[in-house]
Length: 252
Figure 1 (spheres, one colour):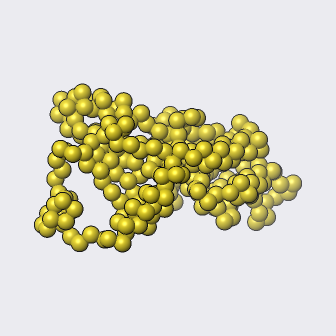
Figure 2 (cartoon, helix red, strand yellow):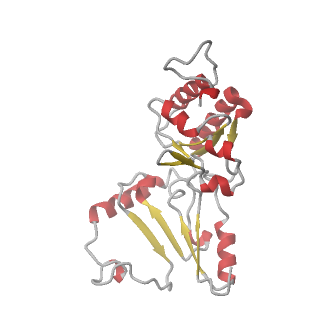
Figure 3 (cartoon, one colour):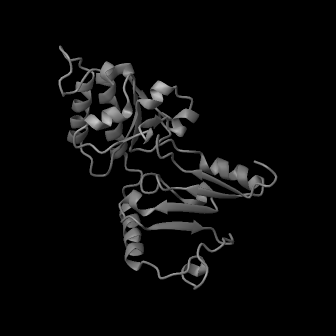
């Protein structure tokens, strides 16, 4: 915090590791210095409690598609008395903060998605499934599968795993019918280490081997078992030279 700090913005939960930040404590620090506090709850809304009074935030944003609403709709919470410069000047829509005709259909869809998310928030079944997934990975990969992020204070659906000796993108390329993501971004044939994992202190090899798995409301136990079976084949070294199938770790 500096004397001229006017706004602090922190994400409620990290999008790569799922680690949950101590938002209420951070908001207290910001307010003690006279700054406003904004929380990006795109990843956390619909998964864990996001009560603005408990979080002590002045501003909070959510993204609809992160909680099963259509893409292209979001919401900004503004605490009463907090002054915000209009995003688009002109007409008086959205209390004068964003001129232009509102998309009523998407706004209604976001409201319904939030309504449906209420009974899901805090439901332990998703965390149980995620923990089972990680336990299965540990049973097959052992110490070669390393959890990135806080072991407890993280979203119930997110697993960021470094597969030792592998490139994360190479694993994704070989997974069939599995939608996951890597902590690396590839640009013009160059693989860059995730700045999040780098800031956490991971070495280059561990960061390059990171894969993020995100489970959802419809994910089943059979589905995670199918993913684990595919991943298990990756650590089985073939008897002969690689011939179009999954190779050993040294092939990558």
